[in-house]
Image (cartoon, rainbow, N blue to C red; front, side):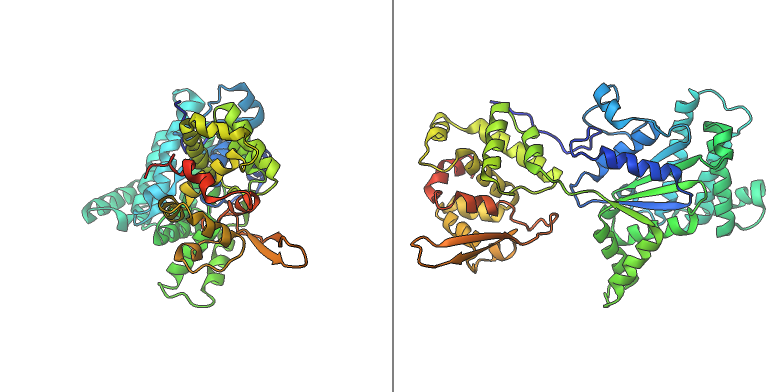
Length: 468
């Protein structure tokens, strides 16, 4: 039985109940007094890119290339997302920072991308018609040349070419060496001219018009590249008509800043200074909420429907939180579980009605989870089925010497009270885990729930589903 393998591309379809936050962030962007730089924090796999692209569509009605899933032709999506709510006053620019991390001056690449996307907006807003009194193309070219001349001279190959560009610029425009303040003033005036060519004059004159530059994947950049881009924003692009939105894992960016500031030698006060640096640049950082109900999201990605219903029902009946609250990891787990289900034979399926055995679907989930996220544990388990006993003992609080356990963290703590009762009483409490930690062994509460009914032999047939 073939199953669909879902990709990890961003989507405009909100399955994580974040549309309300999209609208709230957009309103602040549209009504703030630039220059402002905002941040959107999310751990890797938390859905930052999808959120940012939903934000772009809500603001301007246009998404960046490469959005997967639904299109804006979907009426239900339109009703939820409300595309183009601020399109009369906002032009958006999308910039994937990691693609340009090896530029000596990443801010030059950003300006080039702004120039390119303004040309794209010209076609959208004006339908390709000439802009009359506004020398749109001339201004666009000037933005590119001033970026090369002043900001990125060191990054350009060929000193003679750099000198020729600079001399031509000086003859045509300033006839003197440009300085930072002059560059800032030029860019502000140039962007005003471009906005005036794209939006209503009253909106521009009223100060409501602005460019919203959405920078994604800052946390995927090399540390030095991330720092250089932030420095470029602070020095050259602190503009009265621009709002910047940085999509990032905040702690990763702080660590990158700290490493560059300390020149590789982290001192006790370095992290605090790095955090202050980012705080000064980003006046407000929104944090994407952690998923509150991973089981429901996982169910949407499981197929066929009877399998989705049975597995989700078993998890709900267990009443334990045993899934990673991370969309990317859940989607990967769903792809694997769908493959497992397609390989279940009639003998295994017959176990579903055997009340003497632990729930089949919970065993499928536990096996699939360990296979997907903890390969070292799974290889040990598949080679020696009795290794399940050690996994169970570890989950129940036993001290384990194996390195594969020491590298992981449990989201629960288990204590055992040996009173007069012949059966020891176990108490399970949450250890308030970091939801984003890849070392978290989220399935631990489920393995605890399966005990004492589950034995190593109950997993033999499931272990054979995975290739050796």
